[in-house]
Amino acid sequence: MSRGKSKRRGAFQRPPGAGTGMLQQIQKLQEEMAKTQEALGQETVTVTAGGGAITVTITGHQKVQSITIDPDVVDPDDVEMLQDLVVAAVNEAIDASQKLAADRLGALTGGINIPGLGGLM
Image (cartoon, rainbow, N blue to C red):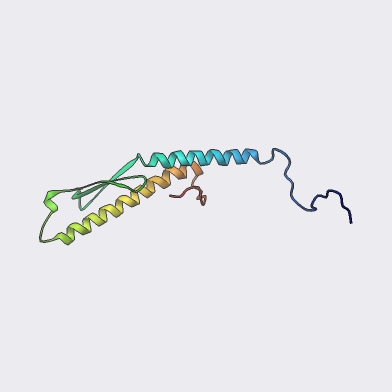
């Protein structure tokens, strides 16, 4: 049995510098995605429900900025209808915000869902 330094047989050894181009591309993509995700917090989408009776504005981070209710739709005898309209409008706004995020992040990845990189994709 030899006591000198031995190299593991069959172990993959990458030549110096091999793969650094891909690593740089991945790092650049991660940086661009982080910038895009940050920018999504500044972007908003506005949706309406009930023929414009309810308007919801939400950011690309799914944070509701405002809800506007047309006074004509406020009926003390039918609060349930108003609640349903608000829920529908908020859900539609969330869907629109998620689509915005998927569109922005998908543009960076060419539409490929990369686990761990997209978060919102």
